[in-house]
Image 1 (cartoon, rainbow, N blue to C red):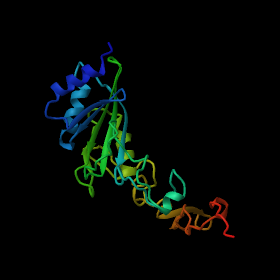
Image 2 (image 1 turned 120 degrees about the horizontal axis):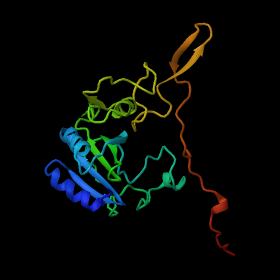
Image 3 (image 1 turned 180 degrees about the vertical axis):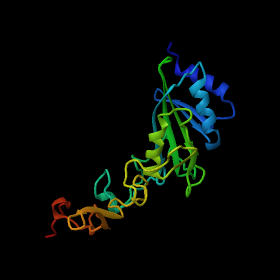
Length: 238
């Protein structure tokens, strides 16, 4: 039996009173914000409550909010509005992050978050839940493997790519990168060219790691010059 999101929002506000940081219904989607210490308890409620029955965890991912909400982009990279934006700043950036009411995003001071998407087949319901890691240098949240077994590989992926730790996970190790990989490649401050490169050495008959042999790319002009093709014609003085 399908239920409306408005009903579910009111039901969650009553059933999880004091345990939710916020609950939003926008763009036809329901999003819950939960503190890390309430993460596991809220997950159990969503999973085992008969009215909700969110039996499936369809996705879990990490998020790095390092530069979230910055109106002005770093001029050492390419921009959506062309090279002119690297030469002078615009008064208003139309691509700045904003919420559903058009207000610019406000930084919470917390860098890493974990987001899960839940599905209730019996209620034809989808819910998004987000929690923030309290420590930016050592991000940790409780593991959800005991609630949804499918969280096992998803949490390993978030650990591998973002460096987020999941306390209570039965086997938290890298899943996509090599065992000797240094760093976490989905972090905003991870260099695009990486730290090392690898190749197969025919003499040693094994894969070896070497320092990166390419330099960082700069995608904007180093020098801004006037172009006569785009200059306004000037009147001649007789």
